[in-house]
Amino acid sequence: MKPVTFSPCGSLSPFVECFWSLQDYRSAHSREISIPDGSAELVFDLGGGPIRLFNRNEESLLFGASVLCGPHTEYFGIDTSGQTDVMGIHFRPGGLFPFLPAPLHELLNRHVPLSAYWPHEARLIRRLAAGSTLEERFRTLEEELLASSCRPPERHPAVVYALEELRRSSVAKVLEQTGLSHRRFNERFKAQVGMTPKQLSRLYRFQEVLSALNQGEQPDWASIAEACGYCDQAHLIRDFQAFSGMPPSRYRRIPERHPNHSPYPR
Image (cartoon, rainbow, N blue to C red):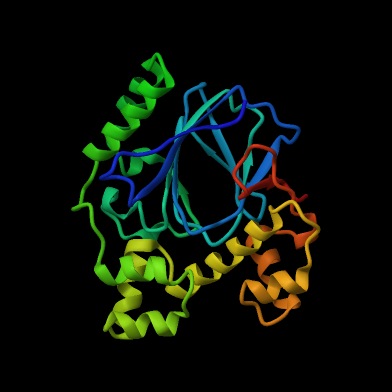
């Protein structure tokens, strides 16, 4: 069954891209990779768990019924063999910041038990499991997320500006417009987004490549490299390998999944 998504309420929409549910998932691949885009994720396995992930060194990471996936600049693996009833919250880049007491750079490229940050994690999982419909479950996630906010639902104006402008402008130009010093801007950005502006800018550019590959046409790598701002095709290939663990020619989007999901490359 393909994922079902739910749009957040207005006050959460600047921070959350969507809530999602995946039930009775049957994949031809027992492992998938998650390709980074600067976002963070909360995942709940309501089918009894455990949740099993793999870092880029193929070391197994085992969790209970929930896991917090911090912002990533690296791919990681997902064991999909037992995903019978899974839900999650997909945050926008920097969107997790109001809901955690720690600065987000502490979670860069990390997975941690949700209970380390949310003391009511067990209650939330019970509420989700008791939901009689998907809409009821999604509303529960929404309510719990709103109630868990540990900061005002806002980010520094310079960070908000940069999150949007880095999609089309260089880090230097964005920094110039913020009026902050390089050090001050980087500190704010890393605390609220989890990575440096340069790292997110590279991810934005890489995501443009993925979008181009999913247009259904035979890729012209030289043209894609130029359109996405790479100095040459070799530069694109290096970034693709670094972020996904595979050359561009091996990337395959899993049908009906997010473009950031691909069969495990090994």
